Amino acid sequence: MDLDAVIIADDGANSVSGTSALRLHVNGKMATIQNLMSYIHHEPFPENEEYLSWSSSLKLNGIYLYSYLARQGFRVELINGYNEDKDRFKELLKRGPKAIIISTTFIMNKDNLYKIAADIRTLAPKAFIIAGGAFIYMSYVMLQKEMSQPGYLVGPGKEYPLFIEVGREPAVDLYIVSLRGEKLLAEVMGDLKNGKSVGLPPNSARLDGSAYTFGAREDDVSNAASMDVDWSSLPDSFFRNGVVPMQASIGCPYHCSFCNFTKDERAMKVTPLDRLIHDLKAVEQRGARYVWFSDDNFRLGKKDLNAVCQRIIDEKISVRWMSFIRANTLEQTDLSLLKQAGCVEVQLGLESGDRDVLKNMNKRADPDMYSRVVEKLMKHGINCTCYFLFGFPGETDETAMRTRAFIRKIEYPEYDGVLTWSIFPFVLSPLSPIYDKDMRTKYGLSGHAQDWQHETMNFSQAKGHVVQCFFELENSSILYRGDNQDMYLSLSPSSRRAFVRYRHECSKLALQQRLDLGKMAEKFRSILS
Image (cartoon, rainbow, N blue to C red; front, side):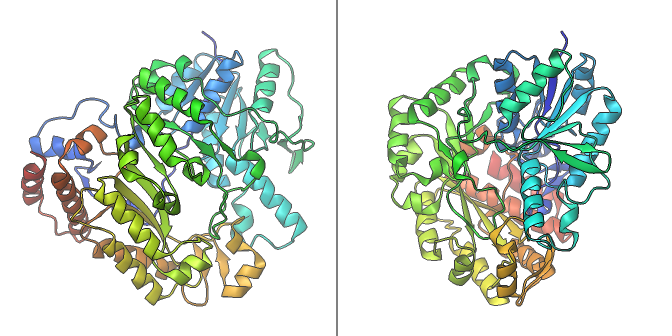
């Protein structure tokens, strides 16, 4: 059957975390619990070894676009990760899709978009390539900033977004420039399906020779439809891995100084509780065992988490789940309810263990509150993944040392919960409050992206603190999103803690070229038996 479009949710670019590359690998494979079991027992792990891991979840941006366009009557297929699924993409091209839709939720710069668009153009020279999503809209906002504040983008900053310095441009036929461009996407798809030419509709852009031209601007956000997914009508393949992403809210009302996410109150929404329960039941009926809430801040930090948990319990929903939840929300939460409702992991953006740095970040939090919340979670056997940032303006060797000491403090090896973390060096990103001229002047901050310095630190020093922290920690671990959750959570709390600690110890030994593989296998065999 012919296709109207192929949706690409992600290009598969690497994380910008400073610790991701430090994870343990064995025989060329990430040392997930299932790969280690395979290694120590000399048995191949079953096919689809990444199933039931958080990383095996499809991307929600792709699921939503698939659901939306399918409900509009279009025949579409989804490619979750372009580089990983390229063979399947080539097979889908045999069905003659009229359009290739690239979502840029996970694409961070023009060069990445250029590479994927160039490859698609080579494979499908006649297809109409459409790109939209976060990176496209952020590029437009940067263009407006640069036009109203000449010199806003510093140094190579003009090379990262679209629209500003025209040179090596992606082979895209039409850009949808909107926070909520799905309605326009459906209109464009309708024109293509009916053999009509696509002009320059409102909230779009296209490259015209050596310059970009833009359609009229219209507000398509204020009255946009809810971002519901019709889970019951999705293909079985979307649920095969046992993990699905969902959203209990969209947006974030906070304004952390390092964050470059577009803040628009028109787009902020909390999913009604009845709808949330409906969706949880729907995905459970389709075979989902785990749900990853991809909220920036679960339900925008509403103080109704106890009520949400009680409703999940009352409805006898048995899926396990995790989400970002702001720490101060958890101070008022009954954590026994949270655990009973199926929450197995909480993600916390703590960023720093130093009060002054947190104040500079506009985090509106303090380390003592963080410590209380993490301790309560770990006591209740709820795992914590914490995110930290080294090098933000005001950071010194002393404040970085406080953060490292703080992370050691919250490892809490005596409790049932397990602490994992991802640690980043500060990245100076356009559209973040810290990027503004006044803030730069305040801290003596110069540079761009990963090439910056301020009065007390530079990027290289920040990266050094990331690595130093990695080596200092002993009772917690870098984040491994590829772990099979059934295997991981089936371990007793003591075995889980031992597994996490020893894997981290091995990762440090491997980086120092001191890892004894025989000893490693024997120790893991005793832990995982």
